[in-house]
Length: 468
Ligand SMILES: C[S@@+](CC[C@H](N)C(=O)[O-])C[C@H]1O[C@@H](n2cnc3c(N)ncnc32)[C@H](O)[C@@H]1O
Image (cartoon, rainbow, N blue to C red; front, side, top):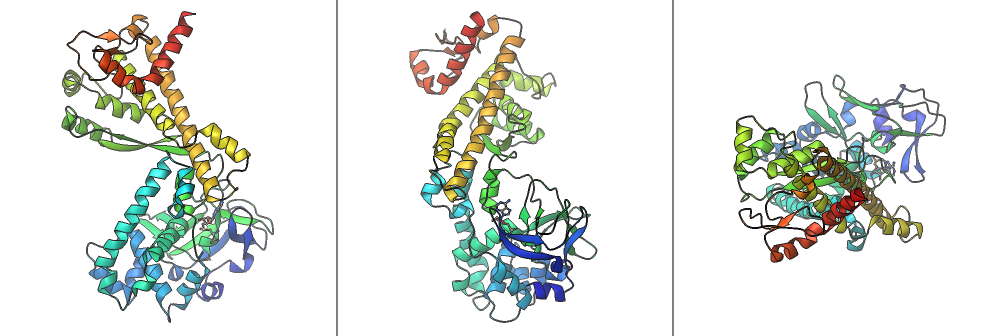
């Protein structure tokens, strides 16, 4: 691969060597000192894998052009990789790159059931399951739309679903994304530059030159002889790192929980609310990233406020008398926040193994460090940490709304409707313990208990500590 790259005019290869490093695996070692900002490596445009190159190929190009609608960028690059890998002659340069690629990957899509179970409850767990299914579906469609139509170019024994997964993982873990001055985005696989490992201690130091079409890596810091040269893949949480790159960073500061908020289309005033969600940049099903630095983004509350609007609120909004960026009313905000705390409690309860237990298991060496189950445990701990912070933020807001009204009766004046069935024009009784919600009868109180119990405990504890 290096000879092919040098012959095409690649610069910098003589100052680097590929070696195996602990933790990161194979990477590039500096054979000389580099000053911060100095160019480390340039890979010419002719050596890159891009959609444009795939379309320019004299055999693959006509097939891609005749496939309508066209394949996604990811599928085009995956098919291009498999196509080159399947050729017995020609494509020597690209084939030398393919030969240097890992034979297998450790993305969560390859985890055994028991390894994935370690992170049950995480968004990674759900997404990985969905993704496995989606890949199978996409593969079936790809066979029907492209592969089976050209058996001479795509022998199916070299384009199996396992090959397709390998090619997808190659793209996910090695392709670089750039935004061109035109605003268009470009996905590039750059041989040798794709051998550089990630460090969050450096910042973006790989660049695409739209004039020459080449990819360069600059030194993000000073390097001594023997140092590993790193690039920055981005601020990526462990749940994404494990799915796309097959590794995690313990105590990753970019960890997040992808909160999915959704509303049934038969819910009251759904269409009006849908418009309000859209004007807030949301949808009736919205996924919002909760992060360690912003565990409860304002947009979560906005979504929930819209979800709870009643007819008169909607009329007030139409007359611009209400704004869902703001608290609609103290009692409604209490309702929103109680629901949020209860929902986060349910999410936390759904984790297969709780944070403290995972910490204990890791300390006891239950999961061999660096293995799949260990990585899954890191993801679970990261997501639980974020969710706990989100719950704390919601509880703090709840306390502030309850006390901020300046009216001690606000707690004793919960929304005058049944917390379970929503009935309001009937006699209601207060929850005897927290006095924070009302029920139309014993049956509704019992039915609602599981949902309400955590918030009930929190409100009751708070009220009793306030009374002391
Ligand atoms: C672009 S490739 C880098 C070269 C790769 N190590 C190789 O042997 O081909 C990305 C892959 O390198 C590994 N990797 C990169 N940075 C890492 C890090 N900080 N910790 C652990 N593994 C890392 C992961 O397997 C990832 O999918």
